[in-house]
Image (cartoon, one colour):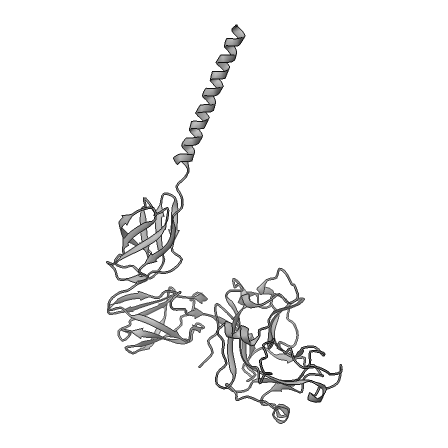
Length: 422
């Protein structure tokens, strides 16, 4: 009897413990968890003046403790879990919208554009990229009284103003890459959004440049195939002038000319121009590439691909970044260039700035550092023509198809794409 009573007592104690655990567990599920981080999904309108209201849409926005617009504290008009209405504060500048709650900080992906009546408006910058010390022209409205322009956080030198433009000199020490412009006139201050107005401060390296006009500090060499190359050299070379059958009008000064007859039976790779006569040690350009990524490194050149067979949409050329082991290469077709927004001018020249992110690991290098880049090259690549014998000059009678390729102003830029003179 005593044993039975003991079992009953123990059973009741177990049930009590289990029930208590259940209640604690339910309590935690129903409200004991940490507050969620707010998420800003969108806002409207996309722009406004100080004093205007902006509606912010998102999740977990309730009980917001602060909202900022372009870094300035905004007044919260109303607040729910999915929507906040806030007033654009005086002194706000174009920038992200942030929402703070007990759960953390949420930020918009896009910039809110602050409109200051009487301040300048900016419609564009030309050129869209420049090195420190270079001049650019900012176009827009209310520019006559501009008294200050900052590129990033550095004060630029004002060269001159009109009602619709201000010309500045890019200051030394400015951050390389995409930069906002802060412009002050008698009506107020306006800071551009890097999403709406893209301006890049870039740097170039003389040893990673080929202009063919004697201006580069680096040298160049090459390897024309004996079967598929008939012309190989600069446009001012007497042999090139005498032998070339398809020299285009020059962009500026000299350019490099490739010509020959192509055959896929031979190689499909007919000639290469290489910056530097021999590979320099890995790390030669480490300082130049320090901190750069495949999103901020660009291969720039102007290229004329000559006349192509009807409806041809095969490969055209190869742009190469050379490392110890082999190449990191970009090999486009005409359609791919068009899809990237590139079209030739009236004389047939393309002006290209290709980000390193578009290049392929041609030799399966795997893990490598851009700081180890040794040199650059441009190759002819055509996928047409037949016939030919190794070691012998290919002709049209053999089945070869004539090709021509001209290149000029080859460079590597860090910070953004290079802007070619118009």
